[in-house]
Image: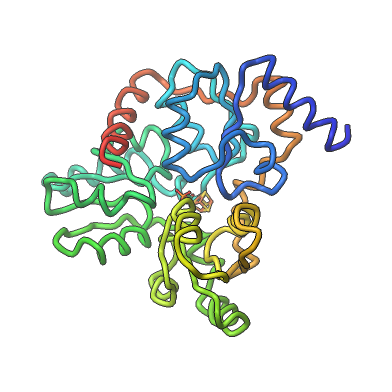
Length: 304
Ligand code: 13P
Ligand code: SF4
């Protein structure tokens, strides 16, 4: 089948099965082009809840598809590739959270949405990179355990000094390892007029060299609402694809061309086609996990 044939089939199957394709901002160009809704983790979780569709095909990583399932348990949620995982989410288990709860009984536990459903089920509230600061501020506890991203935890700590944040030692290899200070120095030398926008999963030294820190949708807002015309983007490379498409008159450069998320890139047009055709790989969660994780997610959505 040619690419055009695959796209035609995807559209036909979507109609036939009353399905919708949600895609994260880090998806490949061709996936961004066929998606019904593109967004960051917060946006996509909200949209998944509102949509009147029978099937959601989630072009993103597993924790995102699980979030859609938790918020819309009666819909069939499909992850197009079984290896579409977030390596940061893989770093923390439910048992880790239970241990931390025992160790710090007075603390509230905030879990980044980049976690699996059973981990969310043990936490008090979820957050995304867009609302982490507000979520932490909203809690009536002085001590906050922040799971699993140590870099996002440090960023939130700098914004909310009145609380004591206990970070978990997880990280995202794309932001923590594949975007280095040297990469950013070189990019700034090449594009001295460009403003730097960085995702808060990056290391502190990268954040310090940035003009703005934002979630992926936050980046779209900054570009839209500021007068600047050139930007260095310190996050996954396909965010640049998304920005170029939305703002064709502005210039965008990736801070590092190596910042590629392996999990996100397992999704292809062909895997989406097969996913719709065979209704694979369905996200299945127990009703007990759904109920507990839903409470943490809905508390977050309430204050977002
Ligand atoms: P956003 O919520 O900013 O889209 O980030 C999700 C993510 O996985 C970043 O690496
Ligand atoms: Fe996870 Fe990092 Fe990929 Fe985001 S970029 S999905 S945090 S591995």
